[in-house]
Amino acid sequence: MKTKNNERAIAVVGATGQQGSGVVRALQASGEFKVRALTRNPDTHRQLADEVVNADLNRPETLEAAFGGRWGIWLSDTGRWWASHRAALTAAELAAGCVPFVRADTSSQLADRIQAQEDLLAETGSRRRA
Image 1 (cartoon, rainbow, N blue to C red):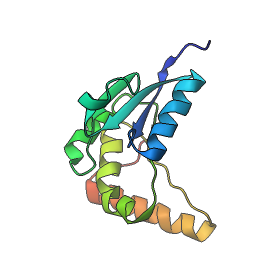
Image 2 (spheres, rainbow, N blue to C red):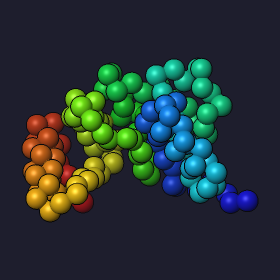
Image 3 (cartoon, rainbow, N blue to C red):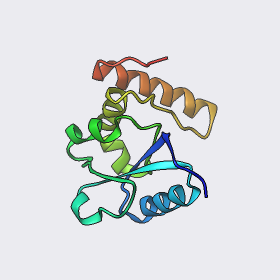
Image 4 (cartoon, rainbow, N blue to C red):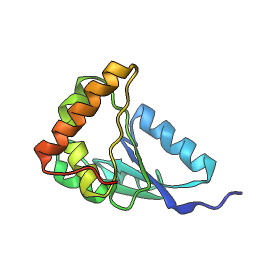
């Protein structure tokens, strides 16, 4: 059996949802990661992962502490919901020391998304860490 690597700890946003719970199970089954489940109701889901913490994407002030100390963050970033929470998530990722990533399907989409990310960083008063 593999030993969990505390340096490779993953925060899973939406850990009690259909996609998030599957990600938690897969990460735990790999034995390679310490898993922090993020949920609005941690008391209800204490056995879900190695750590279960409060995080509410409608309350951005809960995100920085939830992301802190993580090697990586998993979230499903699709649809209008993602767009409406992007600024709060990016600000929390940066404040917690995470470097945001940009995902794109084409080179022109990548250029547009990089520019949007830079604009967002400027709006939040943050700067990209090397």
